[in-house]
Image (cartoon, rainbow, N blue to C red; front, side):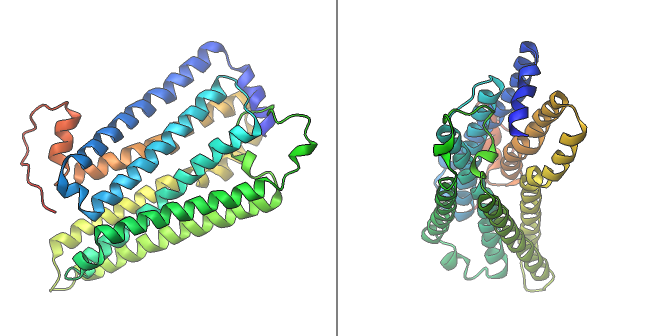
Length: 314
């Protein structure tokens, strides 16, 4: 499948490859620009820099932006018919895997923060502190980095010395880091563990918040907002899972479609299943947050006056 994909790229006309580059590049640039504006907004006020949920959102934005950047670079390399060496390709793939793992784990942390805020409001300020938030973020990055180190060790088991050259004769894709059966099994186990763990945490937090919202002593308005936030996290996780969920379907389509049509379809799914979910979710999160929305709208409108009430609450 990997080697034949390069044949499909060769069959594309120069004009079509340019059009596909524009089709994927423009949304990526727009989404990265929006992410940069959101990051600027989050860093513009002290209350955002000192509130845990906004610190976690900042971490998610940074990871997703890096993920989109490296993914788009790899797309341009493949679309330009440039074949890399195994070490270079492996480095790029591992980099995307590092930032990709941050996404579900940070969503889980953001869900836990909302769970504590609603279910333990009196202890929230003592449990969810900037120090504990920084430790949680560091733990997520360390966990993802260990995953990368394990994948490097598994890659080294492949007999590269038996190859005539380290130059690849196909486009760079994830199969470079799953060259052995052990690596393929590890990839499946790791993805199932991370994604199922994040899903369980988000669902548990959502159920706990729903139960708390029904009690007479709870702040029902705050609980309803937390429910909406956790529901958004579930949608984000599902959208983030969509490339993996669609993989079996891609295998089936690969067998029944021509190579060139399959590559065209993969370009469309790349935009709608990889770029848009990562780029639009932070924007939706920012626009629905009462504290961020006025400043974000003003920044998105290049400083023009936004006629909304600017009231920031920590």
